Each structure stands twice: as C-alpha cells, then as structure tokens.
Image 1 (cartoon, rainbow, N blue to C red):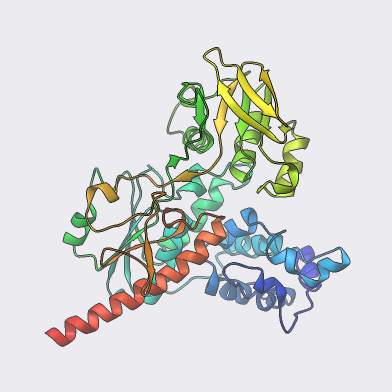
Image 2: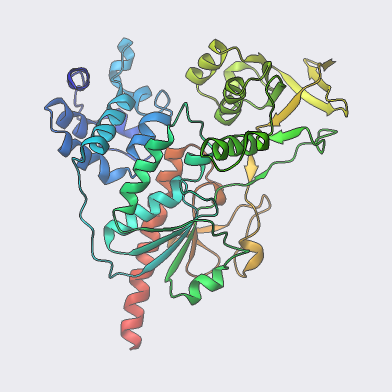
Length: 419
C-alpha cells in the first residue's frame, strides 16, 4: 500500500493527460491515480470501472510500454509512472477486500445474447448489464473467459484473476451458459426465437491463416493458439497431459514473432522442451511482440532466428529455412505456427444474411455501430477484423455496446408506436 501510494504521488496530474490519449479505452488515469495517492481506493476503483470492465486483466497484459506508460510525460526523463502496476494493485485490492459492490440495475430495457466470453463478450456484457439490459453469454468451452482462460499463459495472467473478473461481471446480473456452441447446438435463428432483441458475436478467430509452405499438412505442425488452448485445458484439469501436443524433450520451432509466438515459446520451455527457437521472416525492429516479452523469452533460453522463412517441412521432421537468400535444413523438431488467424464459419454457415469479406471477417456497419448485414446481429473484436490486444478488443466492444443499446432503444420505441 505504501509503495503504491508513493508511486501514485509521482503523477503530475497533467491538464492534458497524454497517458489517457495512449489508452485504447481512454481510461481516466490521472483521476483514479489521484484518488489512490490519497488512499481512496474505493473512489479509484469506481473511476476505473467507468471505462474498463477488466482492470485486473489490463493491469497485467496490456502493452503499457506502447500505450499509457509510453505516453507518460515523465517517461521523457526516464521514469514513467508505473500505471499498469497501479491499476493491477487497485483491482486486486478491490477483489480481495470487496471494496466496490456495484448495484444491480433492474433489467427492463431488453434482452441480449452474447456469443463468446472473451474480452469483447465480457465487455459488451458489463456495459449493457450496467445500463439495465438482460444479458446471457453462451460459451463453447467448459469455463468462461475465452482467450483469457485458454489462450494467455498462466504465468502472464493467473486464472484466479480471470475468474475474479468474470465473477464481477456475473454479479451485475449476467448469466453464463457453458458448453454451448452456437452453430451446432443452437443457431442465430434459434436465439432470436428465444426472444432476444439483439445478438453479439464475440467469437474471436479459430482458424489459422494459410501460408505457402510445403509440408504444412504434416501432423507434427501445430498452431500456437491450439497449443496454448490445450495447455490451458490441461491446467484447468479438463484434459490429460498426453493430450497436450508437445512431449517433454521435444525440439520446438515457433514461426512468427508476435505475443502469441512468445507465449507459445515460453510455455514450451516450461513444459520441458529441449530447445525452443522462434523463426521470424523480419528483424527484431519489426516484431510485433513487446520488447519486454522478448527480453523475458531470451532470459528463459528461447532462441531467435531473424530474417528467416520456413520453406518446407519434411516427413522426418526436419525443416528447410531460408535466411538472407541461403537455404539450410534445421534439425528435426515440431513446428508451431503463430502467423495470425481468421474466424471459424460455424455461425455464419448456419444462418442467413451475415456477410463476410474476402478474408472471412464479419462485415459490420457504422450506424448502429457494429451491426452486421443481418438486422439485430452485431459483431466485434477479432471476428470483425479488429485484431489486436485485449484492451483494443475491449475498446471496440464498448463502441459496439453503445450501438446495441441504440438499436434496442429504437426497436422498443418502434414497438410502442406500433402498439
């Protein structure tokens, strides 16, 4: 507490806060830091809740060095305010001590079904529940959380933190239905038949992008997101260790150099890989991963091959790569692809009227924001092509929640006029 308050007192409370401009959800950072500096943690949490539905998550996995902290004016002198750690401190204190108890608003404004309980789905749920809409979330996995639960490794985001944030959403009156896959189990039409006024698709991306590499169909080639998901399921006690697609002692090559690639590489190290190498077709200055994540990976023994492209995966597990125009064959190992992904088609293929673009992303409109080409169906986050970080998904989802509210309010007015 003393350290947090001392750090908060370093904030200059700028009249034009650059840290807020650097935050994708425009969190009122100086305001809640000022409250924290005076020991008013309840007030600080209340201010954070205005813009963020997942502060304990954002405090841990946001790209602070590129966002709020990267814009802090004190950073020019070499020591920015540690905004991420302060946000994490306030959120954790609130969870542990139960400081804030948000009132449950009577649900009288309409019914919304949300497909997927990742950052986008949870954000839309929180925003609408606070406004008085009845919200139900449908999740295909045995536990809610989406990528937060089954995509981001435990060492970066402890699952008890995710569960605590989900519980706060639940306490707003949001209902969760797990082990329900929209498409096979129930369709968009079926949800509308149940009386929902609007539906939000926050399903993320489940299919990998395809690269022109010979041998990618090799059974020893896996997707990094699939590997991380299986690890998450294993750590949750839902599958056995044998069902994780990596054995102790395996040599691992990870293709790509974003945060997912780094996560997969560091997780493979933790799961006993004999050697882990990240293969990236550009140099270190063009990687999308955070420098802090790269440095942690290096300290844990992960190797990096820059300006290198995979050309072929052989049946004997050897890998042909090209570095600066010169080809060579790497020792046998397992490949994990972390080069991006695209949406699955199980929802779009089981309904009518939802258009996608040439890359498979759901097409949305600006008015009402986030609505697809089918009336009453909205989409946001990765599934609509807004691929980025957790907080960017949250930012997009907040805007979509506003669009859903506008749509249902207009629908309610129209029904009143017609009756």
